Amino acid sequence: MAEEKKDLAVNEKKEIETKKEHTTPLKRYLPATDIVETEQELLLYMDMPGVDKENVTVKLEKNVLQVDGMIETKPYSELKPLYTEYNIGNYTRQFELSNKIDQSKIEASMKDGVLSLVLPKVAEMQPRSIQIN
Amino acid sequence: MALRDLVIRNRNSSPAERSSLNHPFESFQREIDRVFNGFFTDFGGFKSDFFNLGRASSFSPRIDVSEDKTGINIAAELPGMNEKDIEVSFKDGQLLIKGEKTHDEKKESEDVYHVERSYGSFQRSIRVPEEVEADRIEASFKNGLLKIKLPKSEKEREQVRKLEVKSA
Image 1 (spheres, rainbow over the protein chains, first blue to last red):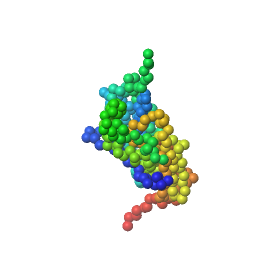
Image 2: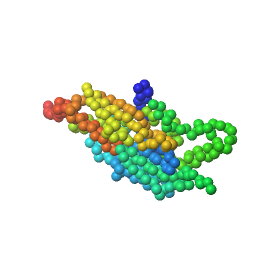
Image 3: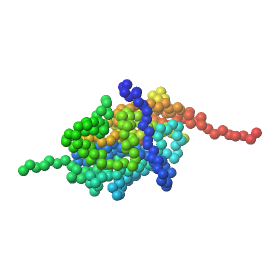
Image 4: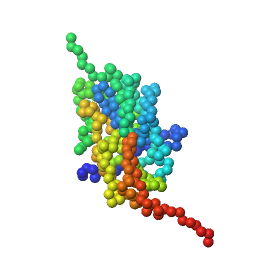
């Protein structure tokens, strides 16, 4: 229990600051991401609370994996904030993929506000046993 | 539980980096590290986050409190959890949210490469400033967002009434 008391600070959402102009008035946030590696693939888990499956886009263009999660703003329009620890906004993040990833086989799924991406490694990168003649 | 000991493997402190001996196996290890590090180049600033990893093991969800005509709305960001992992209770004007977020997606054979998300158990209590109807509190969970609606009691609503402004 002592460990819990030690750090009760809320981890801030990371807001993205870019020089580009955007056409949406909402703030943009960097989704917190875990990357896990297995022998066959890399797994990405991205936290996007409040984002519906329908409002997520994952694009791959010129080796850049672009992930966007759009938030539904309508439920918030009538509310008057009293105390806030987070703001709402869209999530966006980009990853540059190397040629070690088999880009044709990337899979994505969304559950409980977490986007899971499976990036399979190319066959040459996967461990294999070599036959002894 | 020292979660960070379980999940974080700092590449900089791997034997290959620490040793100055140029053993063939060590240089091989270094080559592997280099290959793996080459998987990603992130535009969003992974490198700068790297030293915050320890903090990620403590989990305290972000909470927003807002108000509309009918009541108080409390929202908490709990991505990756579902309604079964969360306990909400209300007593003496205090709303308590409890839960635990576990690493259920990961298997033991996997190697954690980068961690930003938080795990662990948490407990947050919120003092609700106005009188609410405890029997009519509703909690819902969708897309990693917990929403609790606390309707204001009749008495509280009556207090907000329009005053007639008379001309003197």
